[in-house]
Image (cartoon, rainbow, N blue to C red; front, side, top):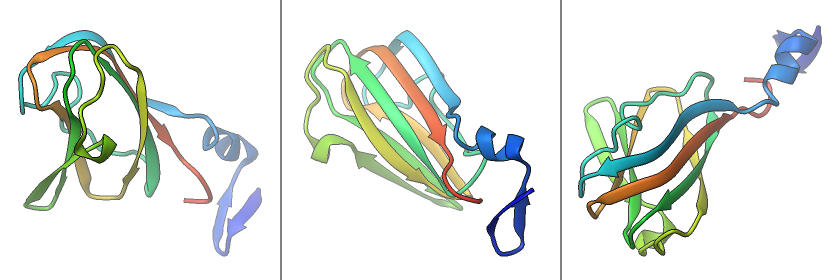
Length: 127
């Protein structure tokens, strides 16, 4: 066993597992409707918190790409890329901090197609 923080112990196998990203979403060629959560990318929850989700997205049209985060009864919407449009067929990557109790969904502000959307959970440290 390896001590990471006082009172927290993990086997080497568990420690190595924390270094391997976990697939949260992996979708291709999915139609999306403006300001509606994307099929296959809604009501997602983290498995080991706190963590970082690495988000990679490509859309076939120029549009904003965002996330809704629900904590308890409160839902907020946040747009990636400083709320600027993503270029059609451009590949973008973003990091999203996710905490216990968060429920996450992804959306676009325009109707079109998600060419590729991948989300991986990156777990760092001794949580």
